[in-house]
Length: 447
Image 1 (cartoon, one colour):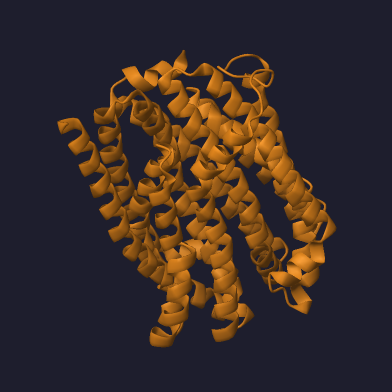
Image 2: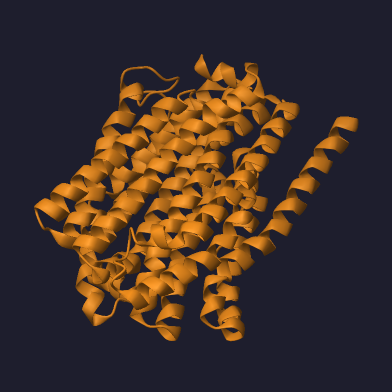
């Protein structure tokens, strides 16, 4: 079976085979976000960017569900494959797919049936209520497709198909780009077109992701296994740290919106939208690294091959640090050239404010990759407690506290430095958890 390479190949070779396609796939998603921001910013306008940002917390929660169930399934299946438990693999896969359909169905019903109340709850002003509600309504119809695509994509990696997983994400991106052009530029559908473009893009990717499972090219298919309530709880518990990260993105976006409205006004939200797109692109690279190496962690941990796990962890940490330094250098040097992709430089005040914010925000990338790898490691080996603490520290709790305090000390600069300070504080926690975990295994080996 293809997953046997996870126990046999040299770790360095395996690391490159799994992380490069995963990073490439996430880079495509990041490029997709940039192009999405380009179409919205240039063909719909600043109001369109602000509306999408206000709607983003709801979409972040929906994506969080996909990440929780997808990564939870991947981590459990990886360990089960390492342990040679094929029956548990089939049960976990079927449970994950059914769980995803159920939860996403409920979220879709909420998005379609309670569109305006959701937009109002997210803080949309009278002028932004309708465009934000429109975006939520039309993305809602496609949430089940998005969710199942997440599950299949994560499982494909641990089934020994990292390249095919990358092709699925690439298909989503190319379809989304094409639909953005057709729906926004050619058809002139505005915010509705932006939402439909996203939905159609991920629906096309879902069809591609289904093929290996339907054609019997994987170790599991939709006919095998049974749905288990106990496994559903395990999937949710295991994937919850990564989901908290996604939910934290939505919550912190909401907090940033409120803070910027208070200190700067709607101009601040438009500037933050541009920085959010930039941040999403950079974080996607680091998440791709963690996702790619996650299959190596879970499978070899399940087999008890701790030396291989340690080698993979060291490689991932080194790669995360080097990528972070590179991102910091690029954003610090070319902030204006990047921000102009999302905001028209003619809006001088908004544009200058966004460039200033990006240069300060960039400090976060010096350390956040190490936190992402640490959280991904504990998730992959099905020890979510430490990962949850890391996710909360770098997300809702850390950023929430910093947003309350730092603007009082440094003004608007404090808003942009919130994420770097929260990430730096979390790095100390990540290092402590990894050290204690390694010491625990060393003592176990000595016994």
